[in-house]
Length: 355
Ligand SMILES: CSC[C@H]1O[C@H](OP(=O)(O)O)[C@H](O)[C@@H]1O
View (cartoon, helix red, strand yellow):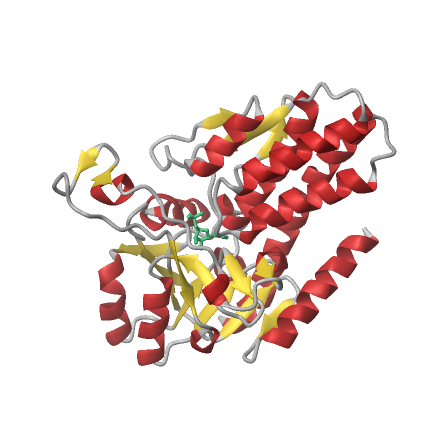
C-alpha cells in the first residue's frame, strides 16, 4: 500500500499533513516561512519525534532559502538562530535538536560554498534525513517482526506510525511487517488521553493498512491484560537516555508497570536518532508541559469546570528495568542497554559518514 507522503519539500516549501484535522480531514499545510514551521511543530499539526525532526530539518533549509544573507558566514549566523527557535518548539523529542544540529553541522562543514550552493546543499541534507528515516523505520519493522512470531495481540499507546515519521512508523513497523508477511495480528489501540493520538491517528493508520484493531480507552488496558488478551506492548519513544531509560507519551510508564505485573513484554521501537548518549538517564530528560486546555477540552468542547487546577505533562519516563527490548534499525538491544545503545549509535553515525 502506498503511503500518503508526510512532511515533504514540495513547490519550494515544506508541506505537511495537518494531523490536528485527522481523521476527519486530510489537509495539507504549506509552510511559507520559518515561523509557520515552528508553529506547525508547537501546535502538533505535525508530531512524533522523527516527524518533527524531519520537519525541523526542512525548516532549516527554508530559513536558508528565505535569508537574504550575501555571504555564507552570515547565512550560517541565521541558521544558528533558526536552530534555537526550532529546538524550543518542543523540548522532549531529541530528534528535533538532533536534526537541526545535523543541518548546522553540514552548513559549517560547507561554509566555503557560495550562499546559493550552500542553500542547495542544506535542502539535499534535509531530503537525506527524510529518506534515511523511512529506511530506518522499515529496518525497525524487519528486526521487530522477529519478536512477534508467536504474537496475535499487540497493545499500542499514542501514535508511532507513519504519521510520526517519514513513513511506515516505528512502533507500528513490526506490526505492519508481520501483517505484510500474512501473519494474523490484532492491535489494541490505546486512545491516549488527552490528545487522543491513538484514537485519531493510530486507529486511522491501521484501518488504512487493513490491519485488525480495537480502539480502547487508556483505563481499559489493564483489563485486557488481566483477561490474557495482550501478548505484548510496543511503543515508540521521544528520547532514549544512554542507560536505556525511555521518554514517551504520558501513560507509557503506567503501561510498563502493568506489563511487569502481568509478565507481558514491553518493547520500545525507535531509530538511533532517538537515542541521546549525552543524557545519562531519564531524570535528565526535559518533560514538555503542554496547554491545560488539551486536558479540559476535547476539541472546542469543555469537559471540566472552569477555574480548576490542571496538570499536563506530555511525556513520562519508563526506567530501563521495565523495558524488555529496544528495537532500532541497527538491531534489537536487551538489558543492560548502555553498551549496545552506544554501539548502535556509533554504527549509525559511521554508516551516515560513508554515504
Ligand atoms: C515515532 S515517535 C512517536 C512518539 O511521539 C509521540 O508524542 P507526540 O504525539 O506528543 O509528538 C509519542 O510519544 C510517540 O510515541
